[in-house]
Length: 497
Image (cartoon, rainbow, N blue to C red; front, side):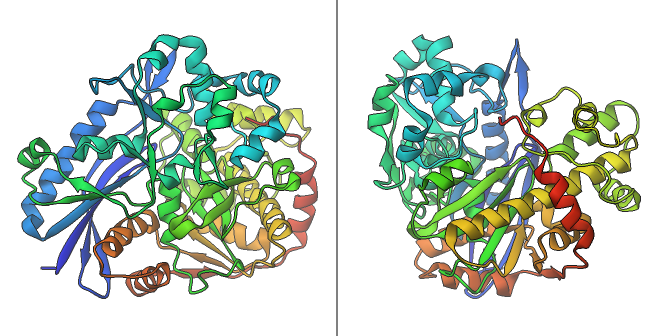
C-alpha cells in the first residue's frame, strides 16, 4: 500500500477518467481507476457538452477509488481542455446546456469583434492566439444569441472550475485555465476588465483567480457521503490540461528556454516555457499565444489542429465499414508514398468537417497536389503535414526567444505514435524525446503532492517524473526530402479558424 494517494480527474475531448497517483515519497505510479467516454452532443443545431453525465461518471470514479484506497487518499483535482464554461445564476442553477467549442455560433464572431476593438488592441490586452472559439468570442456570441442568460448569470466557471465547484463549492478561476479565455491580461495576471467593458460584457461574472496548487476546501458532505471519501481536500492543479502536461515534461533544464514541448493529442500544443509573455508585433503576426503555467511561467505556444485530423478520418473510415485501430492506421501510413500530398492542419475547413477525408482531398485538389485516396495515404498526409507544421512553429519559437531549441519533448497520447514522432524528428532535425504518455496526469498529481508539502519546486517535480517514467528518443534522419517538402508546405495558403 502506498504512503499516500492523490486523485486526478482528467477530461479530454474523447474520454474522461479518474486516475490515482500512488506516492511513496520518491516516485509516483499512476493507476487508472475509471474511464468513460466523452464527446459533444448535438442538440438542435448546436453542439453541447453532456456536463451532468460527466459529473455522474466522475462521482463513480471517486467511489471506486474510495473502495480501493480509502483513508490513504489525500486530495483530488481536475484538469480539462480550455475555453469552455458553465454559467451559474444566483441560486447556483446551471444556465443553459454548456456549448462545446466547436459549435458554429462563433462563426464570423472574430470579424465582428475587430470592428469594435482592433485586433492589435485585443492582443495587447490578452496576448492570446486568435481562434474563433476562445471564450471571449463565445461570450460575444452568447450576448448576441442568448443575452438573457448572460443577464441572469452570477458566475462563470470554466469546465475544471465547475468540477471543483461541484466537488467543494469553490467559485474561483484557476490561473492556467483562465489564461486560455482571451479575457485575461498577461501583465497584470488578472481579468482584462477594460477590454471586457469595451465589449459590454458583464465583468461581475468573472470569479477570483487563484494559482495552481491552491487548496480549495474539503469535499461537500454530500459528495463525501455518495463516494465514501472522507477528509479529502480539493486542490486546484494546473487546470488546463496542457499546463499540467507541460509541468509533466521530464526535462532537467527547468528555467532554460532551449527545449520545446509538444503536448500531442486531439490538439498539438507546441511551445516553450518562458518567464514573461511575448506581446510583440511579431508574436501577434505569427498568431502565437501566451498561456499561464506553473510558478508564474508562461507557455509561449501555438495551438495546432493535431491528431484530430486522424481521429476524424478514422471516424469516417469506421462509418464506411473500414474499421482499423490507430496502430493499424499508422502501419498503413508508414507504407504509403512519402511527402506526396500536404495540407495545412490549421485551415478552417478542418475544424469540424462532416467528412474529414473529403476535406483533406478537397484541399489537395484545390492546391493542385496528388489527391490521397487510400486510408494509408490520407493518414500519411496528416502525419507529414503535422510534422512540417511543427518545423514551421519551431522556427517561430526560436525567432521569438532568440534561443536555439536543442530538443523537442513530445508528451501525451501522441507520444506513442512512433511514425509521427520519427517524422517530427526528421522534419525538425532535432532529437525528439517521447513520453511520458501520462504527462498531464503526472503534472496534475505532483502539484497536489507539492501542495501537501512533500515537494518544494517544479525542478523537484520533474526529477520525480524522470524517476517514475519511461522515455525514448527519436534521432533525426536525412533532411533533404523534408527540406524540399517544407518549401512546398510554406506556400500552402490557410484560411484561419
